[in-house]
Figure (cartoon, rainbow, N blue to C red):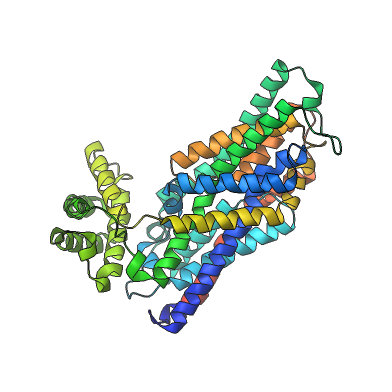
Length: 460
Protein backbone atom coordinates (compact mmCIF):
# COMPACT_ATOMS: atom_id res chain seq x y z
CA UNK A 1 0.00 0.00 0.00
CA UNK A 2 2.49 2.65 1.19
CA UNK A 3 5.26 1.27 -1.02
CA UNK A 4 3.13 2.34 -3.97
CA UNK A 5 3.46 5.99 -2.92
CA UNK A 6 5.62 7.71 -5.50
CA UNK A 7 8.80 9.35 -4.17
CA UNK A 8 9.13 13.15 -4.13
CA UNK A 9 5.35 13.65 -4.01
CA UNK A 10 3.24 15.53 -1.49
CA UNK A 11 1.82 12.26 -0.16
CA UNK A 12 5.30 10.83 0.43
CA UNK A 13 6.38 14.03 2.19
CA UNK A 14 3.35 14.05 4.51
CA UNK A 15 3.82 10.37 5.40
CA UNK A 16 7.50 10.88 6.12
CA UNK A 17 6.70 13.84 8.38
CA UNK A 18 4.29 11.54 10.23
CA UNK A 19 7.11 8.99 10.57
CA UNK A 20 9.40 11.68 11.97
CA UNK A 21 6.76 12.62 14.54
CA UNK A 22 6.41 8.94 15.50
CA UNK A 23 10.14 8.42 16.00
CA UNK A 24 10.37 11.56 18.12
CA UNK A 25 7.42 10.33 20.19
CA UNK A 26 9.22 7.01 20.61
CA UNK A 27 12.36 8.79 21.80
CA UNK A 28 10.16 10.84 24.15
CA UNK A 29 8.73 7.59 25.54
CA UNK A 30 12.28 6.28 25.90
CA UNK A 31 12.88 9.23 28.21
CA UNK A 32 10.01 8.64 30.61
CA UNK A 33 10.37 4.87 30.34
CA UNK A 34 14.11 4.11 30.39
CA UNK A 35 15.86 7.23 31.63
CA UNK A 36 13.60 7.29 34.69
CA UNK A 37 15.65 4.37 36.00
CA UNK A 38 18.71 6.62 36.11
CA UNK A 39 17.03 9.13 38.44
CA UNK A 40 15.08 6.60 40.50
CA UNK A 41 17.75 6.25 43.20
CA UNK A 42 18.48 9.94 43.76
CA UNK A 43 14.78 10.87 43.82
CA UNK A 44 13.63 7.96 45.98
CA UNK A 45 16.44 8.48 48.51
CA UNK A 46 15.82 12.27 48.58
CA UNK A 47 19.39 12.92 47.44
CA UNK A 48 17.98 15.32 44.86
CA UNK A 49 14.54 16.79 44.36
CA UNK A 50 12.75 15.58 41.23
CA UNK A 51 13.13 18.75 39.14
CA UNK A 52 16.91 19.20 39.50
CA UNK A 53 17.38 15.43 39.24
CA UNK A 54 15.65 15.10 35.88
CA UNK A 55 17.28 18.28 34.53
CA UNK A 56 20.73 17.02 35.54
CA UNK A 57 19.97 13.57 34.09
CA UNK A 58 18.76 15.20 30.88
CA UNK A 59 22.00 17.17 30.55
CA UNK A 60 24.10 14.04 31.07
CA UNK A 61 21.96 12.15 28.57
CA UNK A 62 22.54 14.97 26.12
CA UNK A 63 26.30 14.70 26.65
CA UNK A 64 26.15 10.93 26.23
CA UNK A 65 24.31 11.18 22.92
CA UNK A 66 26.70 13.81 21.60
CA UNK A 67 29.92 12.06 22.70
CA UNK A 68 28.95 8.40 22.49
CA UNK A 69 29.35 7.79 18.77
CA UNK A 70 26.80 6.05 16.53
CA UNK A 71 27.88 2.39 16.61
CA UNK A 72 24.77 1.31 18.54
CA UNK A 73 22.47 3.30 16.25
CA UNK A 74 23.55 1.45 13.15
CA UNK A 75 23.88 -1.94 14.84
CA UNK A 76 20.07 -1.91 14.93
CA UNK A 77 19.62 -0.43 11.45
CA UNK A 78 21.75 -3.21 9.97
CA UNK A 79 19.16 -5.76 11.11
CA UNK A 80 16.87 -4.43 8.35
CA UNK A 81 17.41 -6.22 4.99
CA UNK A 82 19.13 -3.95 2.41
CA UNK A 83 16.29 -4.02 -0.14
CA UNK A 84 13.80 -3.07 2.59
CA UNK A 85 16.10 -0.42 4.01
CA UNK A 86 16.59 1.23 0.60
CA UNK A 87 13.85 0.06 -1.81
CA UNK A 88 15.20 -0.50 -5.36
CA UNK A 89 12.48 1.62 -6.95
CA UNK A 90 13.67 4.72 -5.10
CA UNK A 91 10.65 4.88 -2.79
CA UNK A 92 11.29 5.97 0.80
CA UNK A 93 10.93 3.12 3.28
CA UNK A 94 7.71 4.50 4.77
CA UNK A 95 6.22 1.08 5.56
CA UNK A 96 9.37 0.11 7.48
CA UNK A 97 9.46 3.29 9.49
CA UNK A 98 5.75 3.27 10.29
CA UNK A 99 5.77 -0.37 11.41
CA UNK A 100 8.84 0.05 13.64
CA UNK A 101 7.69 3.24 15.33
CA UNK A 102 4.08 2.23 15.91
CA UNK A 103 4.93 -1.22 17.31
CA UNK A 104 7.73 -0.02 19.61
CA UNK A 105 5.84 3.07 20.77
CA UNK A 106 2.69 1.05 21.55
CA UNK A 107 4.66 -1.41 23.68
CA UNK A 108 6.60 1.35 25.47
CA UNK A 109 3.47 3.25 26.46
CA UNK A 110 1.56 0.09 27.47
CA UNK A 111 4.28 -1.13 29.84
CA UNK A 112 4.90 2.36 31.22
CA UNK A 113 1.18 2.73 31.98
CA UNK A 114 1.38 -0.48 34.02
CA UNK A 115 4.48 0.84 35.81
CA UNK A 116 6.68 -1.98 34.48
CA UNK A 117 10.39 -1.30 33.86
CA UNK A 118 10.45 -2.69 30.32
CA UNK A 119 13.06 -2.12 27.65
CA UNK A 120 12.85 0.28 24.72
CA UNK A 121 15.82 -1.62 23.29
CA UNK A 122 13.89 -4.87 23.30
CA UNK A 123 10.90 -3.18 21.71
CA UNK A 124 13.00 -1.66 18.92
CA UNK A 125 14.85 -4.92 18.19
CA UNK A 126 11.59 -6.88 18.14
CA UNK A 127 9.97 -4.40 15.77
CA UNK A 128 12.91 -4.54 13.36
CA UNK A 129 13.04 -8.36 13.44
CA UNK A 130 9.31 -8.46 12.72
CA UNK A 131 9.91 -6.45 9.56
CA UNK A 132 12.77 -8.70 8.47
CA UNK A 133 10.64 -11.82 8.98
CA UNK A 134 7.64 -10.33 7.19
CA UNK A 135 9.86 -9.32 4.29
CA UNK A 136 11.27 -12.86 4.08
CA UNK A 137 7.77 -14.27 3.81
CA UNK A 138 6.51 -11.74 1.26
CA UNK A 139 9.64 -12.05 -0.90
CA UNK A 140 9.53 -15.88 -0.76
CA UNK A 141 13.00 -16.16 0.77
CA UNK A 142 13.83 -18.55 3.57
CA UNK A 143 13.84 -17.05 7.05
CA UNK A 144 17.53 -17.83 7.37
CA UNK A 145 18.27 -15.70 4.32
CA UNK A 146 15.92 -12.84 5.15
CA UNK A 147 17.22 -12.15 8.64
CA UNK A 148 20.82 -11.44 9.67
CA UNK A 149 20.80 -14.07 12.40
CA UNK A 150 24.45 -13.50 13.29
CA UNK A 151 23.86 -9.81 13.96
CA UNK A 152 20.61 -10.58 15.76
CA UNK A 153 22.30 -13.20 17.93
CA UNK A 154 24.91 -10.74 19.18
CA UNK A 155 22.21 -8.14 19.92
CA UNK A 156 20.02 -10.63 21.80
CA UNK A 157 22.97 -12.01 23.74
CA UNK A 158 23.81 -8.52 24.99
CA UNK A 159 20.15 -7.92 25.93
CA UNK A 160 19.93 -11.30 27.68
CA UNK A 161 23.18 -11.42 29.63
CA UNK A 162 23.43 -7.76 30.70
CA UNK A 163 20.52 -8.00 33.23
CA UNK A 164 21.98 -11.24 34.64
CA UNK A 165 25.36 -9.53 34.97
CA UNK A 166 23.63 -6.53 36.58
CA UNK A 167 21.90 -8.76 39.15
CA UNK A 168 25.05 -10.70 40.11
CA UNK A 169 27.53 -7.82 40.09
CA UNK A 170 25.24 -5.44 42.01
CA UNK A 171 24.71 -8.13 44.66
CA UNK A 172 28.49 -8.53 45.00
CA UNK A 173 29.16 -4.78 45.13
CA UNK A 174 26.43 -4.24 47.72
CA UNK A 175 27.79 -7.07 49.88
CA UNK A 176 31.29 -5.57 49.66
CA UNK A 177 29.94 -2.14 50.67
CA UNK A 178 28.10 -3.66 53.63
CA UNK A 179 31.25 -5.42 54.81
CA UNK A 180 33.47 -2.35 54.56
CA UNK A 181 31.23 0.58 55.60
CA UNK A 182 29.61 0.56 59.02
CA UNK A 183 26.98 3.23 58.72
CA UNK A 184 23.48 2.02 59.58
CA UNK A 185 21.45 4.79 57.81
CA UNK A 186 23.23 3.92 54.56
CA UNK A 187 21.48 0.55 54.57
CA UNK A 188 17.99 1.67 55.57
CA UNK A 189 15.19 2.98 53.35
CA UNK A 190 14.90 6.78 53.53
CA UNK A 191 12.39 8.31 55.88
CA UNK A 192 9.96 10.89 54.46
CA UNK A 193 11.72 14.21 53.99
CA UNK A 194 15.04 12.95 55.37
CA UNK A 195 18.13 13.35 53.21
CA UNK A 196 21.17 11.05 53.38
CA UNK A 197 24.53 12.32 54.62
CA UNK A 198 26.35 14.69 52.28
CA UNK A 199 28.88 12.11 51.11
CA UNK A 200 26.15 9.53 50.46
CA UNK A 201 24.23 12.08 48.42
CA UNK A 202 27.41 12.82 46.49
CA UNK A 203 27.94 9.13 45.68
CA UNK A 204 24.33 8.68 44.56
CA UNK A 205 24.44 11.80 42.39
CA UNK A 206 27.70 10.53 40.88
CA UNK A 207 26.24 7.09 40.07
CA UNK A 208 23.07 8.71 38.69
CA UNK A 209 25.29 10.86 36.49
CA UNK A 210 27.15 7.79 35.26
CA UNK A 211 23.98 5.92 34.36
CA UNK A 212 22.51 8.99 32.65
CA UNK A 213 25.61 9.55 30.54
CA UNK A 214 25.87 5.85 29.71
CA UNK A 215 22.17 5.76 28.82
CA UNK A 216 22.68 8.61 26.38
CA UNK A 217 25.68 6.89 24.83
CA UNK A 218 23.72 3.64 24.35
CA UNK A 219 19.92 3.92 24.54
CA UNK A 220 20.03 7.49 23.26
CA UNK A 221 21.60 6.26 20.03
CA UNK A 222 18.91 3.72 19.21
CA UNK A 223 16.61 6.13 17.48
CA UNK A 224 19.35 8.12 15.75
CA UNK A 225 19.66 5.58 12.94
CA UNK A 226 15.87 5.50 12.52
CA UNK A 227 15.67 9.30 12.57
CA UNK A 228 18.31 9.32 9.84
CA UNK A 229 16.23 6.93 7.69
CA UNK A 230 13.30 9.33 7.99
CA UNK A 231 15.43 12.39 7.23
CA UNK A 232 16.90 10.63 4.19
CA UNK A 233 13.37 10.03 2.92
CA UNK A 234 12.44 13.68 3.47
CA UNK A 235 15.67 15.19 2.09
CA UNK A 236 17.41 12.49 0.03
CA UNK A 237 19.73 14.82 -1.87
CA UNK A 238 21.25 16.21 1.32
CA UNK A 239 21.43 13.16 3.59
CA UNK A 240 21.44 9.91 1.57
CA UNK A 241 25.26 9.86 1.64
CA UNK A 242 27.81 11.51 3.91
CA UNK A 243 28.97 14.27 1.60
CA UNK A 244 31.43 15.68 4.17
CA UNK A 245 33.99 12.88 3.79
CA UNK A 246 37.48 13.84 2.54
CA UNK A 247 38.48 13.42 -1.11
CA UNK A 248 40.66 10.37 -0.44
CA UNK A 249 37.58 8.44 0.69
CA UNK A 250 36.35 7.90 -2.88
CA UNK A 251 39.51 5.99 -3.84
CA UNK A 252 39.28 3.99 -0.59
CA UNK A 253 35.76 2.89 -1.58
CA UNK A 254 36.93 1.88 -5.06
CA UNK A 255 39.76 -0.19 -3.54
CA UNK A 256 37.41 -1.76 -0.96
CA UNK A 257 34.90 -2.89 -3.59
CA UNK A 258 37.69 -4.48 -5.65
CA UNK A 259 38.67 -6.54 -2.61
CA UNK A 260 35.03 -7.29 -1.79
CA UNK A 261 34.02 -8.95 -5.08
CA UNK A 262 36.03 -12.20 -4.77
CA UNK A 263 35.07 -12.51 -1.10
CA UNK A 264 31.36 -12.14 -1.87
CA UNK A 265 31.60 -14.57 -4.78
CA UNK A 266 33.24 -17.16 -2.53
CA UNK A 267 31.21 -16.79 0.66
CA UNK A 268 27.95 -14.95 -0.16
CA UNK A 269 24.41 -16.32 0.04
CA UNK A 270 21.61 -16.38 -2.55
CA UNK A 271 21.99 -12.61 -3.02
CA UNK A 272 25.70 -12.69 -3.84
CA UNK A 273 25.25 -12.22 -7.58
CA UNK A 274 23.42 -8.94 -7.06
CA UNK A 275 26.01 -7.88 -4.48
CA UNK A 276 28.90 -8.59 -6.87
CA UNK A 277 27.18 -6.44 -9.50
CA UNK A 278 26.69 -3.70 -6.90
CA UNK A 279 30.37 -3.90 -5.91
CA UNK A 280 31.45 -3.69 -9.53
CA UNK A 281 29.18 -0.69 -10.10
CA UNK A 282 30.51 1.05 -6.98
CA UNK A 283 34.12 0.39 -7.99
CA UNK A 284 33.61 1.86 -11.45
CA UNK A 285 31.69 4.85 -10.12
CA UNK A 286 34.03 5.78 -7.26
CA UNK A 287 37.11 5.10 -9.38
CA UNK A 288 36.04 7.94 -11.67
CA UNK A 289 35.25 10.42 -8.86
CA UNK A 290 37.37 13.09 -7.25
CA UNK A 291 35.04 13.81 -4.31
CA UNK A 292 31.74 12.61 -2.83
CA UNK A 293 30.07 15.78 -4.12
CA UNK A 294 30.71 14.56 -7.70
CA UNK A 295 28.06 11.83 -7.31
CA UNK A 296 25.01 13.01 -9.30
CA UNK A 297 22.01 13.75 -7.12
CA UNK A 298 19.83 11.33 -9.09
CA UNK A 299 22.25 8.45 -8.35
CA UNK A 300 22.74 8.86 -4.61
CA UNK A 301 19.91 6.53 -3.56
CA UNK A 302 21.20 3.74 -5.79
CA UNK A 303 24.73 4.22 -4.42
CA UNK A 304 23.41 3.89 -0.87
CA UNK A 305 21.47 0.75 -1.80
CA UNK A 306 24.55 -0.79 -3.46
CA UNK A 307 26.69 -0.07 -0.39
CA UNK A 308 24.22 -1.76 1.96
CA UNK A 309 23.87 -4.71 -0.42
CA UNK A 310 27.65 -5.24 -0.53
CA UNK A 311 27.95 -4.73 3.23
CA UNK A 312 25.26 -7.36 3.93
CA UNK A 313 27.21 -9.96 1.95
CA UNK A 314 30.58 -9.01 3.45
CA UNK A 315 29.16 -9.62 6.91
CA UNK A 316 28.66 -13.26 5.96
CA UNK A 317 32.40 -13.77 5.48
CA UNK A 318 32.98 -13.59 9.24
CA UNK A 319 30.44 -16.40 9.75
CA UNK A 320 31.92 -18.80 7.19
CA UNK A 321 34.15 -21.49 8.65
CA UNK A 322 35.85 -21.89 5.27
CA UNK A 323 37.01 -18.25 5.30
CA UNK A 324 40.57 -17.75 6.54
CA UNK A 325 41.41 -15.21 9.26
CA UNK A 326 43.03 -13.02 6.60
CA UNK A 327 39.88 -13.10 4.46
CA UNK A 328 37.70 -12.26 7.44
CA UNK A 329 39.96 -9.36 8.35
CA UNK A 330 39.91 -8.08 4.78
CA UNK A 331 36.11 -8.23 4.70
CA UNK A 332 35.96 -6.31 7.98
CA UNK A 333 38.27 -3.58 6.67
CA UNK A 334 36.24 -3.23 3.48
CA UNK A 335 33.04 -2.92 5.52
CA UNK A 336 34.50 -0.15 7.65
CA UNK A 337 35.39 1.86 4.55
CA UNK A 338 31.98 1.38 2.92
CA UNK A 339 29.98 2.14 6.06
CA UNK A 340 31.60 5.54 6.47
CA UNK A 341 29.65 6.65 3.38
CA UNK A 342 26.21 5.86 4.84
CA UNK A 343 26.50 5.56 8.62
CA UNK A 344 26.71 9.01 10.11
CA UNK A 345 24.53 11.50 11.97
CA UNK A 346 24.65 15.31 11.85
CA UNK A 347 24.91 17.07 15.21
CA UNK A 348 21.39 18.45 14.92
CA UNK A 349 19.96 14.91 14.73
CA UNK A 350 21.78 13.96 17.92
CA UNK A 351 20.56 17.15 19.61
CA UNK A 352 16.97 16.40 18.55
CA UNK A 353 17.22 12.86 19.95
CA UNK A 354 18.75 14.07 23.23
CA UNK A 355 16.09 16.77 23.70
CA UNK A 356 13.27 14.27 23.25
CA UNK A 357 14.78 11.94 25.84
CA UNK A 358 15.31 14.76 28.33
CA UNK A 359 11.78 16.16 27.99
CA UNK A 360 10.30 12.67 28.28
CA UNK A 361 12.19 12.07 31.52
CA UNK A 362 10.74 15.24 33.06
CA UNK A 363 7.17 14.29 32.15
CA UNK A 364 6.75 10.65 33.09
CA UNK A 365 9.38 9.54 35.59
CA UNK A 366 7.11 8.96 38.64
CA UNK A 367 5.66 5.53 37.76
CA UNK A 368 9.03 3.92 37.11
CA UNK A 369 10.68 5.61 40.13
CA UNK A 370 8.04 4.14 42.43
CA UNK A 371 8.44 0.67 40.94
CA UNK A 372 12.25 0.70 41.25
CA UNK A 373 12.20 2.26 44.73
CA UNK A 374 9.36 0.39 46.43
CA UNK A 375 7.97 -2.50 44.41
CA UNK A 376 11.03 -4.63 43.61
CA UNK A 377 12.17 -5.42 47.16
CA UNK A 378 10.08 -6.41 50.15
CA UNK A 379 11.13 -3.12 51.70
CA UNK A 380 12.10 0.20 50.21
CA UNK A 381 15.45 0.70 48.51
CA UNK A 382 18.32 1.95 50.68
CA UNK A 383 20.95 4.44 49.47
CA UNK A 384 23.62 1.69 49.44
CA UNK A 385 21.41 -0.52 47.27
CA UNK A 386 20.63 2.26 44.82
CA UNK A 387 24.26 3.31 44.56
CA UNK A 388 25.48 -0.28 44.03
CA UNK A 389 22.90 -0.96 41.32
CA UNK A 390 23.68 2.26 39.46
CA UNK A 391 27.47 1.90 39.73
CA UNK A 392 27.24 -1.53 38.10
CA UNK A 393 24.65 -0.27 35.61
CA UNK A 394 26.78 2.65 34.44
CA UNK A 395 29.79 0.37 33.96
CA UNK A 396 27.91 -2.29 31.99
CA UNK A 397 26.04 0.18 29.78
CA UNK A 398 29.16 2.19 28.96
CA UNK A 399 31.13 -0.97 28.15
CA UNK A 400 28.40 -2.22 25.82
CA UNK A 401 28.25 1.17 24.10
CA UNK A 402 31.98 1.07 23.38
CA UNK A 403 31.46 -2.26 21.59
CA UNK A 404 28.39 -1.06 19.67
CA UNK A 405 26.03 -3.40 21.53
CA UNK A 406 22.54 -2.20 22.51
CA UNK A 407 21.60 -3.01 26.11
CA UNK A 408 18.68 -2.03 28.31
CA UNK A 409 19.20 0.57 31.01
CA UNK A 410 15.83 -0.50 32.42
CA UNK A 411 16.71 -4.16 32.83
CA UNK A 412 20.25 -3.60 34.09
CA UNK A 413 19.28 -1.09 36.80
CA UNK A 414 16.11 -2.87 37.94
CA UNK A 415 17.83 -6.28 38.01
CA UNK A 416 20.71 -4.66 39.89
CA UNK A 417 18.28 -3.37 42.53
CA UNK A 418 16.79 -6.87 42.79
CA UNK A 419 20.30 -8.30 43.20
CA UNK A 420 21.03 -5.98 46.13
CA UNK A 421 17.71 -6.92 47.77
CA UNK A 422 18.55 -10.62 47.56
CA UNK A 423 22.12 -9.97 48.74
CA UNK A 424 20.76 -8.11 51.77
CA UNK A 425 18.50 -11.03 52.70
CA UNK A 426 15.34 -8.97 52.38
CA UNK A 427 14.13 -10.73 49.26
CA UNK A 428 12.02 -9.38 46.42
CA UNK A 429 8.30 -8.93 45.82
CA UNK A 430 7.33 -11.96 43.78
CA UNK A 431 4.40 -10.29 42.04
CA UNK A 432 6.46 -7.35 40.76
CA UNK A 433 9.40 -9.49 39.67
CA UNK A 434 7.11 -11.97 37.91
CA UNK A 435 5.44 -9.08 36.07
CA UNK A 436 8.83 -7.68 35.05
CA UNK A 437 10.01 -11.08 33.80
CA UNK A 438 6.74 -11.61 31.94
CA UNK A 439 7.07 -8.21 30.26
CA UNK A 440 10.70 -9.05 29.39
CA UNK A 441 9.70 -12.40 27.89
CA UNK A 442 6.71 -11.04 25.96
CA UNK A 443 8.40 -7.91 24.54
CA UNK A 444 10.16 -9.63 21.63
CA UNK A 445 7.31 -11.88 20.43
CA UNK A 446 4.72 -9.12 20.88
CA UNK A 447 6.68 -6.46 18.97
CA UNK A 448 7.79 -8.96 16.31
CA UNK A 449 4.19 -9.97 15.67
CA UNK A 450 2.83 -6.42 15.76
CA UNK A 451 5.47 -4.86 13.50
CA UNK A 452 5.40 -7.82 11.11
CA UNK A 453 1.64 -7.51 10.67
CA UNK A 454 1.87 -3.73 10.29
CA UNK A 455 4.63 -4.02 7.70
CA UNK A 456 2.67 -6.66 5.78
CA UNK A 457 -0.40 -4.40 5.73
CA UNK A 458 1.42 -1.15 5.00
CA UNK A 459 3.71 -2.58 2.33
CA UNK A 460 1.07 -4.74 0.69
